[in-house]
Length: 298
Ligand code: PSU
Ligand code: MN
Image (tube, rainbow, N blue to C red; front, side, top):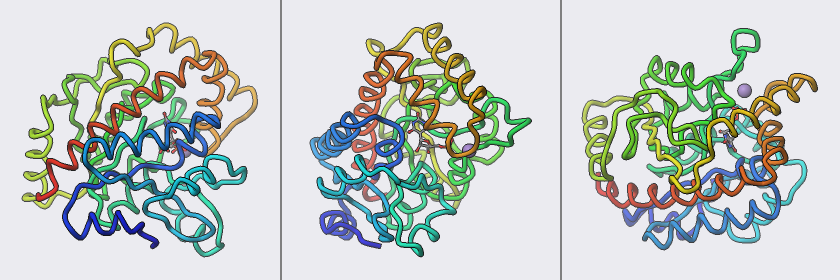
């Protein structure tokens, strides 16, 4: 593992570090918005007094922390592998370049000793799961890997009730940051109840209790999009229904499903989806940095 110097220094000196994923850069957002946001997220984390560590595999080498040139590279490169946890050893062995999803980022961050990870939306149980069996590795990984993941929940292009049920089955703790509902990414509410916390010290207390009890797995912190950036539910549903029917028509399966839908939603919404995406990513990075500071000595 190539851990960037400032990240390894911070970790060994017990200073706060926040991991960031690279799939949302390589496969989740269009160029050049993706590099812009990747850099912005890093600077937001620094502003809050933590060290950012974007994770990716470059030419077979695992990188924990990327420089600006490397961020630029992963944002522009064409044949970047979308990695869930199981592909990490293959990507390394074959000397390939890959972007880490929530599952792979959680695994590598935890291996490196990083406790907090910030992202946009989690993968989950896909609609039509009874035919496709498509359930993101993200959910299973979070049941095994010790990491606090800050996200704005998951997009309603997934089956959100089943996603929340699955997390319960797997014993993954979910906390709503100043909310009683699992956030639905573009919208603040999903109708799915989760336990509420009011501040980062409460999140830190839950983390410590879980640790004392030796419970395995992660903690999902759901941070809803800010009200002025929220998109009306009917509008989101409309985008998603069009995107899903295009995916169906084109026979999109497996790993391609999520990037395909995100790309279509971007086009259908005339870029409005991307604006909201950028806003919540920034807010999540800020909250993750605050949590990392709070639990640094836990
Ligand atoms: N959801 C989003 N944006 C994303 C992703 C999910 O709103 O960029 C990415 C994340 O990296 C997530 C992955 O871990 O997609 C899930 O992919 P899959 O559904 O193939 O497991
Ligand atoms: Mn899948």
